[in-house]
Amino acid sequence: MTEDPREKILAFGTAISEGAADIPGLDHWRSLPIAQAPSWADEADHHAAVAELSALPPLVFAGEVDLLRARLADVAQGRAFLLQGGDCAETFAGSTANRISARVKTILQMAAVLTYGASMPVVKMGRIAGQFAKPRSSDTETRDGVTLPSFRGEIVNGYEFTEQARRHDARRMVQAYHTSASTLNLVRAFTQGGFADLRSVHQWNQGFMANPAYAQYEEMAAEIDRAVRFMNAAGVDFEAMRRTEFYSAHEALLLDYERALTRVDSRSGDPCATSAHFLWIGERTRQVDGAHVDFLSRVRNPIGVKLGPTTTVADALELAERLDPEREPGRLTFITRMGAERIRDVLPGIVEGVRDAGLEPVWVTDPMHGNTVTAANGYKTRRFEDVMDEVSGFFEVHRELGTHPGGMHVELTGDDVAECLGGSDPINEADFDARYETLCDPRLNHQQSLEMAFKVTEALSHPERRAPRA
Image 1: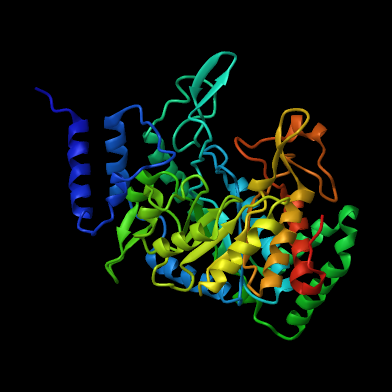
Image 2: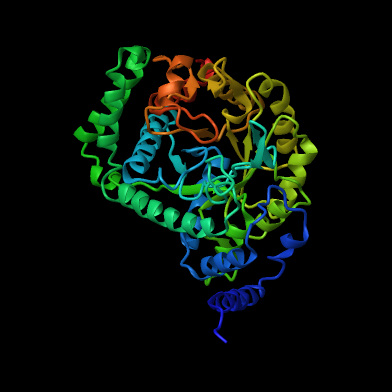
């Protein structure tokens, strides 16, 4: 009788799982409610994929994770600012050198402007090299009387509305790993090989200013130009500025994938999720007694949690107790997504309650998810003025309460897409038919992203202005 090769793979996976089981409590999440979990179509493929991932090298390293925790501790204590940006949902086909470099370039440009405005370091982090899974409000989607599983990101299934594409295929997790590995390879090359040279980034921003639509930022751009020329004249070592730190982040939605890529730090014996430097828990999966909170409470990475408008002070404190019981600087980030209409009403009580409890998390605004609307022509979109109004409200609340507005978490792309309405060089609904590309949520395009950076810089440079308005 011929031996089934998949049985050998399954046995290999069992051996790995048993070896990892020595970490106390790490697999307790399996006994808890798991929100947003896929229904894998083939159990053998699922076990084989997990086994293969468990044997592959880490995507990031514990030393890098430790460094990010130190950087985020600076953010929490008001000595730095965090910029998180990137795709709502990465795609395998979209992970090309040109598109990756465009995303990195956009974040570097924004960071250069923000560094000037804040007069402090900007921690640069991409929604990149792992943002392949998306939560859904419904398990199914119906079109013309046909009902199929919802699209959950390319790590789970395909976007095409066919039975085969929408099948939950665990082999996609392995493809996500290899795509993430090649993406990180490029990101490291870009950020360590001279692509991130401050002088080049400054020249890119001068190109942005060539558009008359952005004349309102001319004075600030001139100030930055004078600062760069002064540093050059003063003999500042620009060679040291040819490289920069750049960290990867994604929502830890798919626990099978995260668990398979968890490794033990040989220095400390602690488990570290090696799929990304930073992981966050979404609004739909932040149940204190749920699987996602339990699993991420046991890894050493810095962790973020999305807090929507229904969040209470008690919710925030319970999450902090589970995820950061030792109150370690840089460990916990609260990413608030309230919506422009509600942020000034809801956020103050939460920030005040957390502050009064003696906690010092990183506070970050996600001004995108609470401001999604449907355009008249049926496209899901966001208005740039609403996005900026939520950023404004975020700054106002923290200024009034004496806490540090620590950063921004933005869905953006480096491409010339038309997905969010408005901006000084405005996108209109008529642009959507030709330039709407996202498979999930609308993103700011390259120009809108840079405009956001200039507006936020006004608030960072001059806190008395209080509001980066659209």
